[in-house]
Length: 335
Image (cartoon, rainbow, N blue to C red; front, side):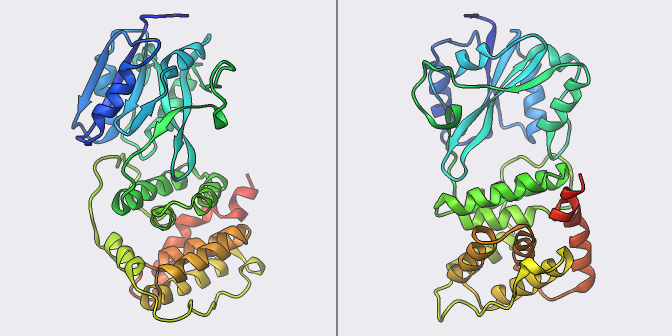
């Protein structure tokens, strides 16, 4: 096994659990040659580039403050390095999604050819950039000597999934999927959130759908701020049910076209915002995601976006659908 050629890059913006991540670095069976900490630098691409410039070893592992790594993580990621491998990605256990692709080992030399860009999806942009120089990105597989853990995971992703953090985090993920035109992957993430049973899952689901319509394509990964959209959702989910779930006016979304499913969902979201509560929102998510198909998912996105509207504004609805259209089922079936 190679030793002494991997450093750790710890990124933190003042999270109270950053020392927990550092402790997991210090427990590695293959200790890092050095630990470089970048503190309170935002947004993410700036922090990552600043840290990479301080690395003096051929490889480094990016460790975010909300990670707790298994003891063999560094060794397992380093074992995945082969010829022309620029990045090795490992999955982490996550209480909302089950697992996420979160821990990465980088070949430091790749940063002489590319840097993380001011992009809403800087990691993907970097991987694409180094691929043009024939550097590969691979996913690590847990060696057979490890414990029988699901899906080859290498640690835990465990931020404080407060309602605000969850809403903003998944809003960003929705925006990233729209930017990458990854409609099928976005639907899969919504199904995983519905199945999670986590108390913050509704905030995550609505945040994901709402994020599709965020205008900026720049890097927005920084401490998350409050806002009227979050306050509106929090108020809805805090309401005490006064009566039965709102009568479903969506009809059979599976028999509609994309545009009609979107508009009917949007109208239903307006109704929920006025008269609904957590129970009614959860019920429509269950129907459209758990028991529906591709067009029901389009209606679900419409519902979520309608929650934040003040009125049925046809011009705004059409502008929003223009953003959604490239990742509707009809669009990604063409590709």
